[in-house]
Length: 153
View: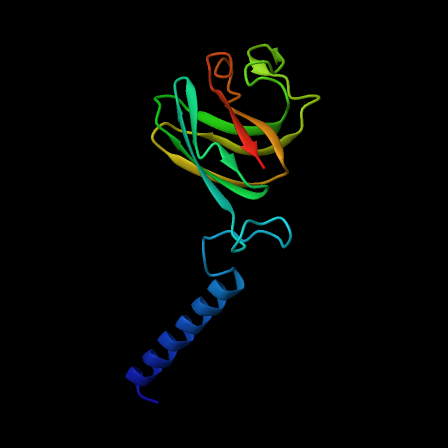
């Protein structure tokens, strides 16, 4: 076997391994929702979340129950995070202790861990119908106004 033919065989083998890996891992960045709880089409509904000092804007602010993907952008100068909890309370009435929302007694439906200013992060949460409070729980941020409501039908 010539050196050129051996290189081609190696390149084809590497391409086959890469293709198999992509197929095994899903081959896509689109997140699939489980049957029964997904919006039409079987993919997560996307909510754009913009976090700044000190607010959170959601678009849209009403979605269907099932898999909801939050694409969060930190447009502020400080690090932020995003947490969703199902609650009938007003968005500014969660219990606060030592500058953060007291999470005991609350059930988090999902969290996007703290991420830096100018960065983006995402997370997919399985949300049942109801009202959710979406907030940043870094000390002082919730009290500073970083909270809003998401309605899930």
